[in-house]
Each structure stands twice: as structure tokens, then as C-alpha cells.
Image (cartoon, rainbow, N blue to C red; front, top):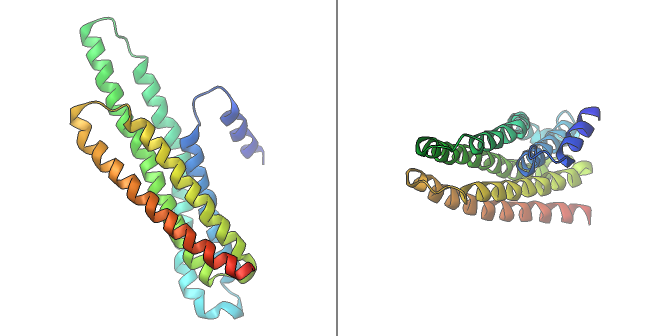
Length: 208
């Protein structure tokens, strides 16, 4: 728990990073971890032998996502730190002003790409939680529901972080990226809401 407490203390401090983007990735990692847990509580049980192969496949995917999202916790903070560094570049001459402006625009693109990747992976977590909820150990079905909920929260949190970075991008050379990113996050948000709703329907029926 020491590492967790350190992270929370850093998050609560006045430092700009880690921030909401890192929390979005953490939510996704938590959802993936819960998905893995339910798989591990199912695989090897005689009662669930018919779905064991399916859940072994899911387990490999949730473990991949757990690792990737954990890495993105730090990557999001690093990307924003680069934006802050660009903003601190000198701006005394016209050349310096132009270089600073260009650097800010480029780092904002990178800062938007990280939470976009987080959002995509969080959607994967929720998608996998559908199989976990439907086929996993009934005694842990509530955990599959929590996996979907925190995965959905991570997706929407990541969306906010994409949007705030896109809002600062003015360079014409990045217009195509802004348009595609906006379309992607809207589609992902609709998809994750739909899938999370499906998972909760399965879970609530099972626990009622």
C-alpha cells in the first residue's frame, strides 16, 4: 500500500502531474485487473470447465491491458510535462516565439494521443468484462460489474483529457488529427456506454 499512498499523495499535491489523465489510465488498469481476477477464480474449477478455454483467452487480454494501462499512467504525466516544458521556452525574439508556438502545438498533439490510447484500452476492458460477467465465476460476478464500471469511468475520464488538449491545438498542420480524434472519442464513448450497460444488466440479474 505504500506505493499506492505515495501516488495518492502526489496526486493530491499542487504538482500538475500526475493528474486526471493518469487517473483515467489507473481506472482502466483496475478494471483489467478485476477482469483477470474473475478469470483466475474461474479457470480450473470443475463447474466452469465448459468456459475455461474462453476465459483463458480473456485472461491473456486483460493481463496485456493491465500492463499497458499501468505504463500509460506514467506516459500521460510525461506527455503533459513536455507541454509544460514547451510553454517555458524563451519568447524574446520572433524566432523564439515561433519555435515556442510550434513546440507547444506538437506537444499538445502528443498529450492528446496518450489519453486517446487510454480510452481505446478502457473500451477493450469493458468489452472483455462482458464475457467475464456472462461466463465467469458467479461468486465474483459483482467484480465483473465493477470492472465494467471503472473501465467506463476511465474511458470518459480519458475523453476529457483528449478534449482539453485538442482545444489548444490551432496549427493547421494538425487539423486532420483534431478532426479524427474528435470523431474517435465520440464513437468510443457511445460504444463503452452501451457495453457497460449490457454488463450491468448481466450482473444485476445475477445478484438479484
